[in-house]
Image (cartoon, rainbow, N blue to C red; front, side, top):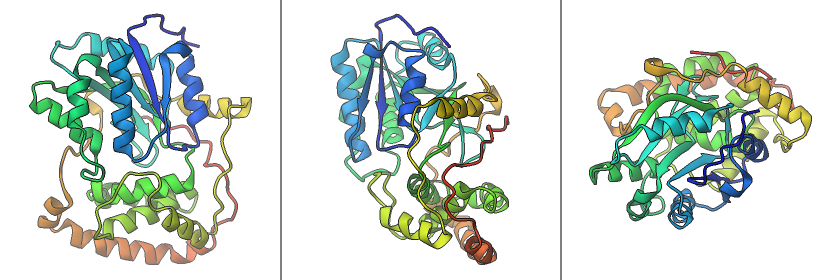
Length: 325
C-alpha cells in the first residue's frame, strides 16, 4: 500500500454517477490520499458536475485539485507521480492529464482524470460550456483556458485503468458517444471488438452502442441518464441481465489488484493520443462514414446469429488484466 500523501495542498474530487466501481475507486484513493482531502460530486448532467468540482476547488484553499471519475481505478503511486509532473510545469499551465488503460479502446489513452492548478479554476468555471453544447465538455473547457494563455499538458504517466467492470448500461452509453466522438474506430477498434464479442459481453454491448451512436443523426450527450431505454432493449436482445453491484469485499479488492497488476507506470511516446477535435463531418469528407456504415451493417449481420446464442446471466466481465501496449 502506498502511504497517503500528507500535504494539505491537494484536494481530490471523485465524480460519481452511479458507476459500479465507485466504492473500489474510493478505496484505492484512500490508500494514497487522507480521507479529509477527498470529496464526492454526484450530479447530472456532466457540465453541472464539472462546475461543482471547480467550485469545490476554488473554496478549498488547496494549490491543486485532482478530479477522478468513479469508473477509473488508480494504480499504486499514481497520485504522487502525477503531482510530480504537475509541480515541474511552468506556472502558466492550468492542468495535467496522464493516461489510463481503457477497456473499450484496448490501449492507453487520456480519460477520467485531471490535475488542476486551483488558481485558474475561476477562469475554468466561466469557460464551462452550456449543458449539451459540447460532446466533450471538459476538453472544450481546457481548450478555452488554453486560448486564455493557460495550456494543459498530456503526459505519459499512467494513472490506472478505465471502464473495467462497469455496468452494461454505462458501457452502452459510452460506446454510443464514442460512435460520434471517434468515427475512426470503425477502422481500428471495431475489428478487435468483432473478434472478442463472443467471449466478452462487455464488448458485445459496446458494439451495439457504438453502431447506434455512429448512425444517429442526433448529437450524443454524456449525461448518464441518457440512453437507458436503448441500453435495456440491447440487453434484452443479447440475452443479458444487468450486472450485480460491485462492492468492496475481499473478492472485489482481489479483482481490482489483478486488473492493476500489469499496468505500466509510464508509457511515454507510445501513448495513444486523443483525436483532439476531429469531427464526424471531417471524416465524412474523407468517405469514412459511408464506408463505416457499410462495415457496421455487415458486421452486425454476421454477428446476429451468434448474439442470439450468447449465454444469459453473465454478471462479471472476464478476469483478464489489461495487456501492455
